[in-house]
Amino acid sequence: MIKKSDGMTDTDIELYEHMCKAAIDNLRDHGNLLPVTIFVDPNGKWHLVPHKYDSPALKDAVAMALRAIANATRAVTAVSVREAWVVTTTPDKNGKVPHITPSEHPDRQEMIMISVEKRGRTWMASIPITCINGVPDVSSDVPELVEWPEVKGRFTHLLDGVMAGSQGASLN
Image 1: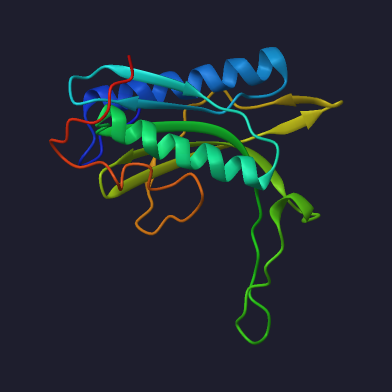
Image 2 (image 1 turned 90 degrees about the vertical axis):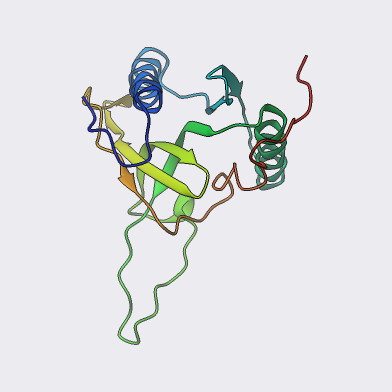
C-alpha cells in the first residue's frame, strides 16, 4: 500500500496502484508494455488514452495530443505508464555531465516508469526490468512514489495548459 502523499487523493493512489499492477502483469504476459495515460476529470471519470510511437517526431505528436486531451477533459490528474531507458551518469572532472542518448548508452537500464501528475506537481516511480534468458521480468512490488519538483521531458507537464474551471472540448 502506498502512503498518501500531500496533494494526492485516495482515487489518485488507487489509480496509481492499479496502473502499476496492470503494467507488471502486461509486461510479464506479453513481454512489452503499451504506453498508456489515464486522465481524471473533475467529476472523477477516467479517460484511458493508449498511445504508441516509434520515432521522435511521433513522440512529439503524441505528447501534443495528450495535452489536448488533458485540456478537453479538464483533467485534474494524469497517470502515465511507459517503458523507458534510464542512465545514471557522473560528472567529469570539470563537473559536466556528458549527454548520451539513453537508448545508445552501454549501461542503460530499462524501466517501467509511472508518473502521477496534478496541476503543478509530479510524482514518479520506476520498476527495473530484468531479462532472464531473453524474457523480461519485473518485481511484483508497487514502488513508492517520489515527488519530483523539477521533472523535464516530452511527456511531463501534461496538465499545464488545463485551465481550472474551463469547459474543455467535447470528446463525444
